Length: 307
Ligand SMILES: NC(=O)c1ccc[n+]([C@@H]2O[C@H](COP(=O)([O-])OP(=O)(O)OC[C@H]3O[C@@H](n4cnc5c(N)ncnc54)[C@H](O)[C@@H]3O)[C@@H](O)[C@H]2O)c1
Image (tube, rainbow, N blue to C red):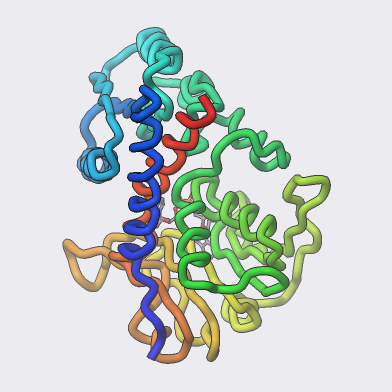
């Protein structure tokens, strides 16, 4: 039976260390504060916001929510984001996306100052991250994956990792963080022409680059060769038992509506059939998703300490 890598102990450990840091900052006269910018009221956003507020309160931080109507104009939202960015009492900013389609999302995200961009939302922060200029924060979910791997003592240096999916929010940044941790990273994703690509990645001068494109290899074949598999494709139970072998660690980032159990969620990994084969596997729910708001607060406290 595989070790079940639940997120709660990881989140609890992060929160315990944050509580001490927040107490020390408060003693010096500063309380770390998260600014949450929300346009509209999508249920998923409200759910995540509720978790973020709860974590802030648990560690002694403050938060302030800036709620805007879905019909807000580009100019008004730009002004609002700029104002929040300039507030000296706000150290970290979370803005929910996607924004309504009449708004220029990249332009608005770019207004979040890099030093307060605790979820790497701005394209400026992301460009700096992938260029190896480590002044900003990596996004929270990929950092949560790394924190999970560290907490459960999963070795990465010199080990083979496969990342399924190269999305901007999870797959691409987690590939970068794994490379930086010394792993050999191969990624599997579908490109804009609909072709399945299997790419070996490398760090060159701090930047993540394509080292080699592999031909004629399937996703299960490439996964079977890996020590660690991070699944972030957003496809329910995409990764099946034919991708698994003894000794492996699976980190499942997917949060998908479960087609087999209406009203429930499932991951990208076929947990029931993969779990009996491998050494460690994170569940969905109760895995990576339980760690992200703790990382959000960790980044905000770090931003406060830097400020
Ligand atoms: N746990 C969390 O806190 C958290 C946070 C963010 C996203 N997520 C979840 O992670 C998943 C990915 O999110 P995202 O925003 O990166 O998605 P995305 O749509 O931006 O990226 C998906 C990636 O998967 C690839 N892909 C799709 N089908 C594939 C297939 N059959 N084989 C190989 N690659 C395939 C795509 O090419 C793309 O690169 C989603 O299920 C999302 O809900 C979880």
